[in-house]
Length: 133
Image (cartoon, rainbow, N blue to C red; front, side, top):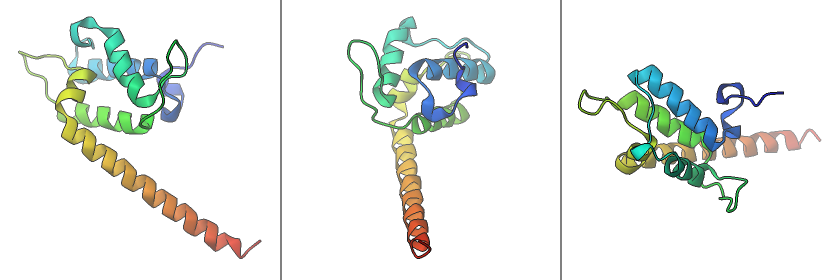
C-alpha cells in the first residue's frame, strides 16, 4: 500500500515531509511559482518544521512543541495575508517564521484558548453524565 499524501490523512498525523508537500502545493496554487526554501536548503526548512511538530526517527528525534494543526493554521494565515511582489515573487516558511512572529503568537494564543474551551466543555459533559452511571 503506497504512503498516504498529506491530503489523505488528518493534520494531526502530518510529518515534516507532509508540511513541505503542503507548502509546495499551496505556494504553487497561490503564487504560481515553485516553493523554494532559503538558499535551497531543504534540510534547514525540514529542521525548523520538525523542531515545531517533533520527529520520531533519525539520530536525534525531537519532541513535539506545537500541534500540527497550530503550525498549519500559521501557514494558512501567512498564505492568506502575505502578498508577493515582482521583486520578491516567492516566500518560504523560514521567512514567515522569522518575520511573522506576532502572527505566530496570536495563532498560538487562539489555539490555547480553543483547547481550554474544549477541555472545559468536555469536563462539563463528563459531570453531566456522571449521574447516569
